[in-house]
Length: 452
Image 1 (cartoon, rainbow, N blue to C red):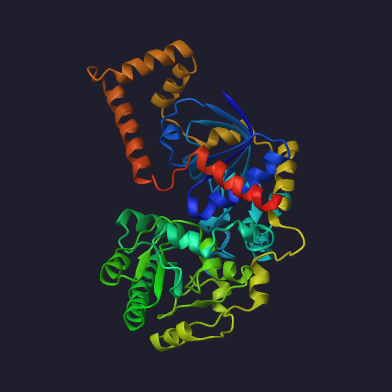
Image 2 (cartoon, one colour):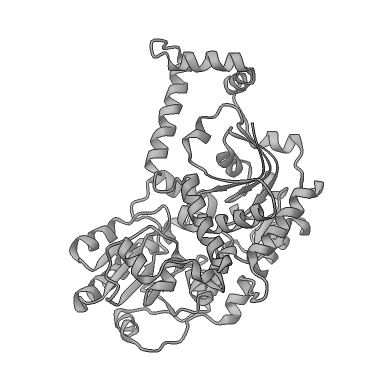
């Protein structure tokens, strides 16, 4: 079994991977054993016994037992957990609602959570009722890439645009889509309603209708100004069929899901988004960003920092913005500072590494066997399989039986189906899966920045 000090599990590469590589770089530099793995890796899914033991497991979210179980599968044993809380900002209607999905229950009450700013600290203490020692005010590690020296980490305009066959000479608008996919299955919508209330269907309609109108604006500006180009970045994990149709009609409208939002922000000429924290990334990058809102947001779903911001509500305002030489930033700095820790003296990745060391060495954060056991509620057949696989020669027999397609015992048929499903899922998420070479390349770029 491979022994680690820290294991990072990520969900969306463009949202998390660079940030995790920065943290891995710092923790490796301090002498710790670390690794980064993708949550839907088929190797993780198919494991019937752990092949990794980590002292500290760092996950995308830890709302409850189910959320953690989905991430750890059977492949990892762990002693402690840190919730990276990449979804740090919640809908306003959930800020003070104790039973809100993102206000934690079960295992979520027993692990430390990273907080980007004071607003989230207040929520975790007053609405989620977490122990103060479990709330870690760190700031957003991703914002470190928008300050010296890490701002030099990103690709230059020629290299980035060449990678995606874009013209480096043409004026480029970047739109970071805040909209979920425009063809979500009913079961997904039902799950979101169970988490955020039945009026999430109204919010989803708002997103679809808004996306339709905003895409019309971009299509019209593409036709009016054929010398400019638009980069449309879908919301992570949510492709847009509407956007694909615009791309088919306009050669200067490009859908690109690769690279982080920050990479595009620092390079493109104009930045646009909607009900999204992307405006904060533009603020830290000292880059102008405007907010597109053709429709009012469903009550309770508009982010607080957006409610304090100036919005562009029709095509004429948008057109004027595209041509404007100078503009005013839409969100007051005071609103940003309430939600994000702004510390120009000490970067967040160092604060995070200090906190991770504290969790590693302090037994206060160690989970009990009972807490870990409660994360999984295995049926009897799975418990028996895990017991068998704990004995090496029985495990080898199990693998041989599994590979013998002539044997059609119900149990083996079910196990083969699970294996097939894992491979299909991995193939569907191939764009998210990474490997050690890619991680090493990102870390080498980070190290080069610090060296220079």
